[in-house]
Length: 417
Ligand code: B12
Image (cartoon, rainbow, N blue to C red):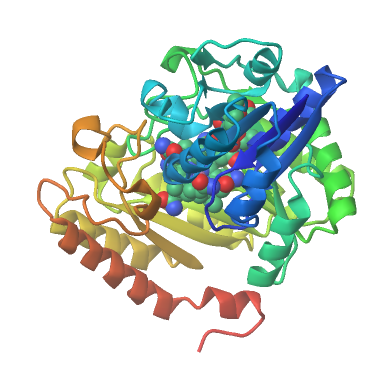
């Protein structure tokens, strides 16, 4: 049986980790299968279609912006060979499973895909399947040869002069941020209560990191986890074990500012954490409360200061456009951004993706999602600011802090002028 896994087109350097897990799991459970992989940002449509038309099953991984590409490919493949069975999974189909059963798509998987794909290969043809919650003990490492991880590393190298790839340290995020599909509705799971956070044993994670660092000569280890430090004891355990094993390759996690203490941050620095990304989101206490992440100005400031004191570079990410946001709130964001003195700033525009609290199928059902994202979209506005005003703020803040902090100069070893 031939199975093809396809990651929809979106230009970035990240590898298709989810499909890496699914491919590895299928291969560990079934003998007589051939699994192939294509990624839309490397492989053109002709190559993907040629690789898929003689497959038994073609399975696409989709976020909202990549769903149109995947469904177009699926339609074309089925027009050429109607016997090919097509499946979609990932965040977009998980958020709106029934609406994802468009022409060309036979089946939708909501949630973690390993067991669901195994069931599909074994003949399950239910239109919508809820994936099973997996424990790390039952998961093989992602198959990085299958997903051709080296191609992603090469892109990262071209952009940053560093060989970088990512690892998963836990599954499910315990927070319920209103703008996030993973947070608010826990779209991968049956319901919010059935989204248990699972931490990966640090030994297993570090074993994988060591092997992949060796195979791919990595310079920097990233994490796919949106909030890496949800469990302070786990973080400390990871750092202690990394130090003990003498693994000096730097690492770079996404942090929740509310879960930091000095001992943890110092251990992270000692374990060669070179940089962190903090979801600052806003400088307005009102907006922070509305987002529901559980951070405060105080916790954010403390986290940033502790990290900088420990010699860790800090990137801060802000989101503009919560429904109740006003000019006054954005002025507070600007002042807070000034005060934090981060090493890099990112300002994105809220995008009401399916799964987030802001998604409204009546309003946004027909949006051209392939060309709308959180860097730029032409439709989102707040109760007080229209889309043009929000974009003006985004542009203003981006320019202000781009001038102030030449991050790339720093990493290349030049001092800011
Ligand atoms: C890392 C990450 C990125 C990376 C890229 C990751 C990649 N490989 O492409 C970067 C930073 C570049 C990025 C960019 C974007 N991201 Co992003 N990202 C994440 C993050 C934090 C982790 C994803 C991940 O790697 N997880 C680890 C792997 C192992 O799990 P997984 O991919 O979820 O796969 C599992 C299941 O989803 C499922 N599954 C996945 N695919 C398939 C396919 C089949 C057939 C089946 C059966 C199952 C299945 O099974 C897998 C194994 O269990 C998630 C949030 C989160 N908590 O997961 C957001 C998230 C996925 N991103 C999101 C968004 C919106 C984007 C952007 C559009 C942002 C933007 N520009 O506006 C882009 C689009 C990128 C893309 N490739 O489509 C949204 C998606 C919402 C939605 N409705 O689609 C999320 C949920 C965050 C949010 N804000 O809500 N992202």
